[in-house]
Image 1 (tube, rainbow, N blue to C red):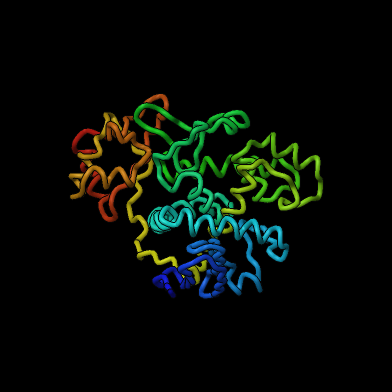
Image 2: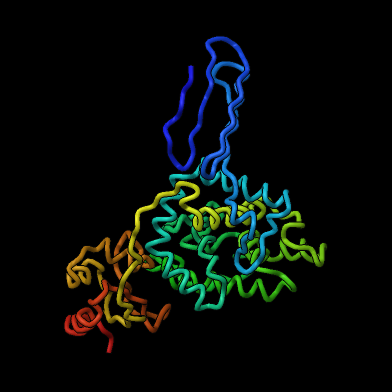
Length: 339
């Protein structure tokens, strides 16, 4: 009996099933997937796998300014393994990353580039937090960049404000600036390092990675034996970029979403706490929508704090596009602004 799976994601898989024990082999190349079906018994087969696009094979690719040596079989295998993990095991989650990358990604990438770092680092935020401001990790990290993990606390003092009503790590711009500062410090500290090794140090600890590099001077990232997390993460970052830049090849269909559009009022020096639902009402929206623009606010109370000794200049406030002038006037009229 010949069975053909429905087309989807750029490939078609054909399986030969026998009514009794037999051996059958089917091979098909279509789109981004190569399918090798080996049925030693009825219903048995090996899992298909995705391959690199032809232009990547021919021209290669760079990540964060570092050329990825995909001409080396060992490097190509590591990247392709992670590409298959994302496309086959994490596909639904990855599609959500691309949605969030369309909405929040431009703001984060713009901040990265303003800090003079490679824009590709936005992919790191996607893997560390799923681009969710409330993300947390087992090691104590939080926010867009999983700031505050054990390794970061050990290698650099916390440079962010975290309290019961506000956390810099949840704000997309502030957290990105903090992450960039840490990455820049690592880049300067470890002689001759590139951004790939800086990323490894960011997630696994600068001291740990520096020892590895000092023992192997002149070797590239791909020639070093890195801690397991870094070893997987770097290959996965490269794989994610390849998938994102070749969505049609891999059959990744993501609806077109508009990036966040807002007026930035800067740090607002408030005389009293501002409930987000109050500002939302002024803007003709709801508290949840306003929190999405200001996720540094603790979602359990939804209040932008007044200026205090922790932040004497106040806290940043974003409002829907075109509402900046109106909100400023109402803040003054309703007695929210400190004199």
